[in-house]
Length: 328
Image (cartoon, rainbow, N blue to C red):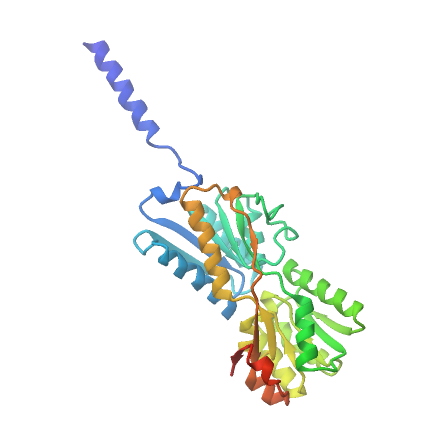
């Protein structure tokens, strides 16, 4: 009898230990818990990132991940890299079920920690070049997501349509953002091939952007602003400098246009957030993250600020107005 009792005791103990596994981040693991805990991180705050974040959250809710099934922990580093790294570490320490990173700097920061937590990135222009993944079609590093490659040549063609005669462009960007550097390199290549000139100013904080714009304004016919988190956060200052000189600003997002730039050809920020949510849903329903290809958004829209056009004396042709999203 004692021998039988001992065997039963060992069986109970083994069963208890088997039930105390650490879990992990296999596809579908998070959906088995009571509440799926999602971290959302970004380097800086701007309207584009807000739209992306809301697009992601609203899509997840629409897919059935209601408040009692999924909670979001959103953190913004307010443009400070050290703060961003601290936020990422806190998310890792808290063992989120997965993390959503908005734009390149936040995505690099969290992926480089190699935490084992799945990462879904939103709006990274060059995920491979940024070292976030090695292959778009077969993503590694426990990450996948959406890319917002900027149609640079189309931007300059739009400039030719709206403000013909622009020969020298002012470029303001942060060399610490690989997405920005990639877009600037493409812009320079286009301008070199088409007989255009450029002046550039490099900034390391958003507080330097206005001064950079002022330094370039008397040397250029227009500004071209890449998809740069730091510069985008200071777009109203760039727009004011440009309006004072009566020169156009061509931005890389609709939010830049809403902040005073003249025009852009860009993705829809809500849509790219929603697309990334669909990828997270695939993961939660059992698809391994490495089997979810990263995608480049290829649908763009023309956005024009009609108030800015009036302020700097630009007459927009009616056929262009008829095919653009207009912001006043």
